Image 1 (cartoon, rainbow, N blue to C red):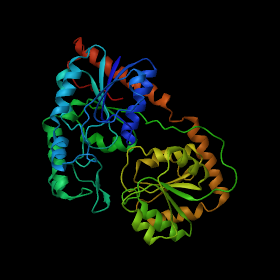
Image 2 (image 1 turned 90 degrees about the vertical axis):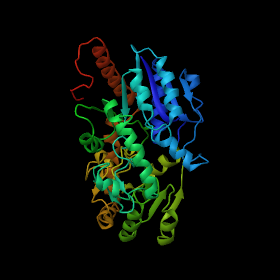
Image 3 (image 1 turned 180 degrees about the vertical axis):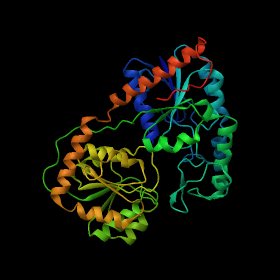
Image 4 (image 1 turned 60 degrees about the vertical axis):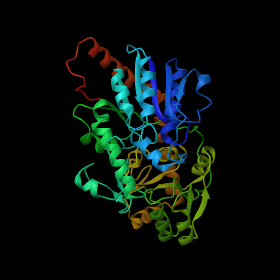
Length: 421
């Protein structure tokens, strides 16, 4: 099998790229031929020594573009990426090649669709976020600070100012989404879609064509199993972007109400404001992976108060693996990892008093320790290891390839499979 992975970035700059690159390295280590096609460099130095063919266009993303107008045009329709991907796929053997798209919205654009369709190669898409069905990618109305339930590209959606920055940027994203749906026809192209949480699938299924096959493949996390902490549990911990949609202000407010100390690991647009309004909170800034896990192993609990859907928040799973119970908003996909009352608590999304009630409960050292043990034991019965991820991914690849082989041989009268997985 030859797997062509398609992603915006050729190096790790976030969760999407991390999953794409780590899975590329893992597949190559298993003897599978892997290529990576990406728009933005630099290239992860581990890829080529692992035998992975890398095609990187050395284009800009929004963080490096000198001209925002030129980048907007690239993000709407990246003609250079379409042509380069078409050339790459034309050289592939259709009998053994599969195209797996991880990301397109930050640099490649929907223009990859015609290139993949013209190649005739079987393909699938991992939905790390919601750009395939939502023009802003998150089903979240930033000015309203709430989950958006409008039908994408409906009149209500078009009229709504829901973008994090400005309505003109929302307009550009809607133009891109129109091209995605009606020119590239990406929802029709991707008959197989990988989802990373049950909540995510429930949100996108009604918006995808009938017969779309959904495959659940959890993202891997890198946590080494270690003995549980000794001594009294420490502080309540927040890890991630300090922003409104992540619920950081809700945690700060709830901690003050409960009379406990809030510790923030990360940075973001709300950090300065929260530090000013809540001088009792501790702002540690970003830490590397080892530093974050060390803090999690000593924490009383991780608080994950996100007020939007999320995809599969790996921070929640990392905390459980480290033996920290998790208090999680009931509106986000992180709730799927937490057994309410056993490995942590759910609380009503957006309600600081509901969160404060659980913070007060977990000031009980004995309860916090019991929940931490339960979290640790339950996670390690089925850890989200890279091997588990790759086993599931290879199974999906085999399913997609079998269907493509059957269609080439004329055994199926339709292009889109009708079964679900």
